[in-house]
Each structure stands twice: as C-alpha cells, then as structure tokens.
Length: 503
Image (tube, rainbow, N blue to C red; front, side, top):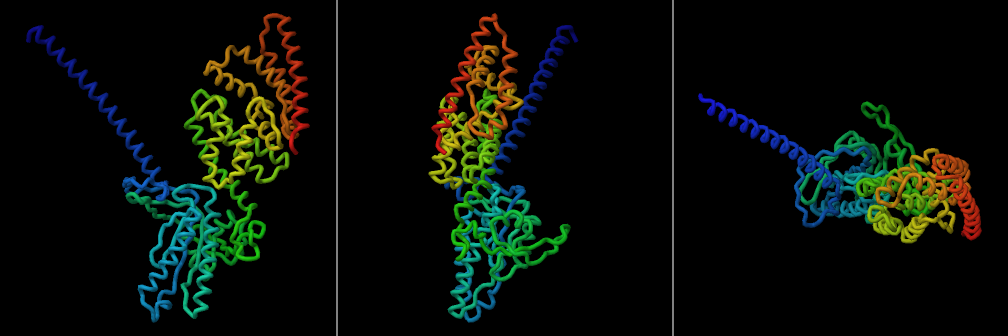
C-alpha cells in the first residue's frame, strides 16, 4: 500500500467514524423525542380520562384504551336492589324490567344533578361515584345529598305502590369514602371501572343497610356529620381494619335545611356558604395552577406565592375583624383572583382579574351578587388604596401585608427585580428612596392589621433608610422633610377614609 492509499484509507475511516457519531447522535435524539412523545401521549390520555363524557366535544374520536388512574378521595354510592321474583309474579317480565329501568333512569337524573359519575346500572347493581373523573373535595357531601334525595324518591314510589296494593323493590343504599383505582376505557364516550377496598366496603354498607335507608361508613361520616343527621347503628368487620362503625343518614340538620320540618332535603343559604367554603379548595387549586403556568417569568413578586399569602391573610384579618362566613368566602375568592389579570396584562390587571372571575365563578355556583361584590374587592386593591367598606379595608391590608413583615426587604427586592425587568425602575438606591416614601404614606385600615404589623413597618423604614447612599447632607435633609410631609398627609388621608367609610 502506497502512502497515498494509506492516507486515503485513513480519510475514509475518519469520515465513516464521523458519520457513525452523527448517526449515534441522531439515534439518541430520536430516542429522547420518542420518550417525550410517549410521555405527552400518556398525559393526554390521562387528561381525556378525567374529562366527564358530557363535556367532551361531540366530534372527538379518541380511543384511550384502558388506563389506570388513582384517586385518593372518592365517595361510592351503591344500591342493593332485590325483589324481582316477588314483583314479577303474575306480571309480564319485560314490563317489570322496563319499570325498574325507568326507576333507575330517574335515579340517574338525581346523580347527574350532583355531578356524580355513573359506574354501573346493570340489573340489581347500581353504583355511582363522586370525585371521578374530576377530583374534588366536596364529593362526600355531594354523594350523601344525592343519597338522601334518592331515598326520598324511592319512598314516594314505595308509598304509591303500597297504596295500590302492589309490591315494590327492596332497595338498600350504602356509601363509603376512600381511595380507588379507576380504569378508563372507551371511544368517544368514556366509561370507568372502579376497584379497591373502598368499593368493596360500599357494597357491604348497602347489604348491611335496611330497606329504604342510607348506611354510611365511618370514613364518610367524619366528612359529612357536620351537615347531616346521622345515627350510629352498628359495626362492620373489615379485613385489616377491624370493626368499622356504620351510621344511618336521615336528612340535613335543621340549621342547614330550608324545610327542616318536611323533607329536610332543601339546603338553605347557610349550607350553601359552608359548602362553598369547602369547595374553595378545589377552585384555589385550579386558579393557582393557572397562575403558575400562565404568569410571565418576570413576575418575581406578583406570582402564585403572593396570591397564597393574600388569601391566607384575608382569612386571618377577616376572622380578626369578626366578619361572617360568607364574607370570608368573598374575601378569599377576591384574594385568589386579585392578581389573576396579570396573565393577560400588567397594566389594569385588576380589571382583567374581574373578567376572569366573572367567567369562572358561575361554574362554582357563585351568585351574580356575590361575583359583583368580589369584583369590587378586587378593584379596591388598585393603588393608592381608597377602601370604602370593612371588607375593602380588609382586602387592602391583606394585599400589602408584607410591608410589615420581617421578610419585607427580600420580598420588596423581588418587586424591584420585577419592575427592573420591564424597564420600569432604575438603580436600587432610587428604589429604596421610593420604598421609604411608600411605606411612610401607607396605612393599615383595620385594627387587626395594625396590631399585627404596624410596629414592624416602622422598623422597616429605619432599616431601608440605613441602606440609602446620599450625595451630601443637604440631599438627606431635604428627603427627611419630604418624608415628614408625606407622613402628615397619610395620617390625614387615613382619617378621612375611615370617617367616610361605610360601617
């Protein structure tokens, strides 16, 4: 082999090695892309599996095969149905079956009213679930409410049959709450199959019940006994758990019912407020997730953590000011949405937050009057604050609570970074001067906030002043005079606001 041939061979080998390395890189890239696609497909399928069938677009045609999902808190309602042989004596069997189908059809309407997922309606087996496929914290209440209404409907039918001298179905209702595994399957219309000990206990609750009664487990009882009249009637042996207490549910407690002396089925305003406060956890999870995903990256201060702080503080100050439960609900909801408008625009974000609230809150059964009040509370957070009512004062104090906290300076610096990222702020030294003026002009409007934070706020001013660099003594003295005037004007403005405020 000549030297030229040798060089040519080396060149070809090097070329092949480079091509091989390039192919390896492409292969690695394709593998990663495949993993990402597989992960996205799985997320998509799980998302579809959690969408109620009636909310799917009519033209969707996705077969998700079978997917196993886990739900940590689901409430199962199981109806044990007997009496076919006794009822069908001397009757056309098909007529009897049609009769039962009509009864189950009406029971399904009740289940859908409470947004429950129908699992099984075959023969003498009837099962629905709350908290599937959309997870929520109210499903124990929803299912028991449905159970009470179903029991009332069945009793009316039983009395009608009895008046005609006819036999009626024997129906026993059992309810249990716990974790389940759900298999989602189907094309277009998605169905669910639930498995686990929670389901088994629900069926045993039904078989251990009495005709026409609702038997709930201790698991459900601890979550609903505040709202319903319950009677302990025995224990059920459960494998690995020992004896499980059982309770019969009668109706809503009188204080939560608008017809306590009749059916006890109709919830009153007090119940609706309690329910909404419980449901708030679900609403909060959705909005915080929206904020985390949609807020711009440069919002170092107005992020979802700030929203959590304001929600918590609104509740704390609200209770400190002795407002009602409904007012706590309005405050917490307004706090949740007060910065949601930042997902649309930094400017006028309060207005956009109101628009988002108007779109979402009706889905959670907020009334028009409540939504209007919530929007007024959101708009009250515009600077400078000019609250007119007790709730607006609480809202303003909650939004600016950080001004009197020990972590004020690091939190304040995140706001500086946020403004600087948008070219709205210059040097940090200038920012500190602005902060001193702002803190001096700011006033808390509620006794609770003043007791919690006002002293600390004075310390914040001294701490910031100590960090400011002055060109000379004259500049410092002029600044102090200006701050003193701001303090006087602030005290006067606060007095005027409180004097004119609605009580």
